[in-house]
Structure formats: structure tokens, C-alpha cells
Picture 1 (cartoon, rainbow, N blue to C red):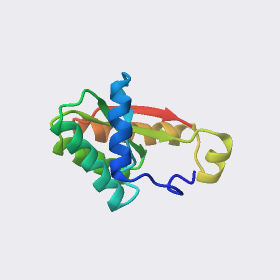
Picture 2 (spheres, helix red, strand yellow):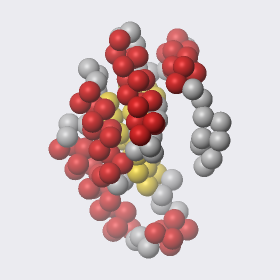
Picture 3 (tube, rainbow, N blue to C red):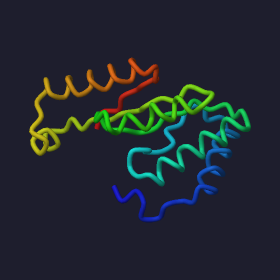
Picture 4 (cartoon, rainbow, N blue to C red):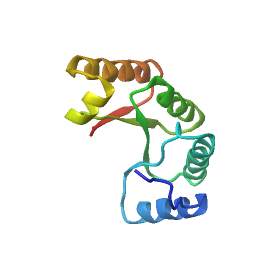
Length: 130
């Protein structure tokens, strides 16, 4: 949770991605494009790099179940020559549910809304539960 206390440069990110591919990584979650405009631009540059060099990597970006978080990933999917997916997460702990005022039905609805939006926009998806 202090993700950008020491944010790597885009060059460092690209180097880490290249090295990951060299050792056989096939799938990667490569950023949180809804976090800021600069993060979106970094994600776009990463995709451009992967596309330019035809690097074999299945790409996902992180989002919460909020449609506003998913929109930048749908945009990236449309910009890229490869399929770009959304790996969205939802907190399921008792503390998170209490703080957010969620119940089980609320969490299911949030997930369903996210899946529907991504499916309508032909964007692959996966879910991570906190």
C-alpha cells in the first residue's frame, strides 16, 4: 500500500518486463491505469513496447470493480494489437465489508457489473479476491 514510494522509471519497468519474458513468464499484471494520467501513459507505453517487439506476454492491468477503473483498460485494449485484460479486485474481508457498508449481495453485484461491462467491451477479465 505505498506503491509509489519508490516508483520505477518506465525504462526500469520495460527492463523488468523483458527479463521476465526471458525467464518464461507468460502472464503479467502490469499496472493500475486508473490511478493517474501518468500511470495510464506508462501502461500505454508498455503495451507499445510489447506490440513493437511482438513480445509473447498475456497482459492484464489492475482495477477495482468500479466502472471508472475499468474504462482505461478497455481503452488500452482497443489501442493494442493484442488482447489486454482487466484483473479486477474486490476486498472481501469483514473489515472491508464493514468500512464500505457491503454485504455479500453487494459484492456479487459489483462483480457482476464489472464482468458485464468488460464483456460488453470485448475485454478479457479475471478477478482477485482480497
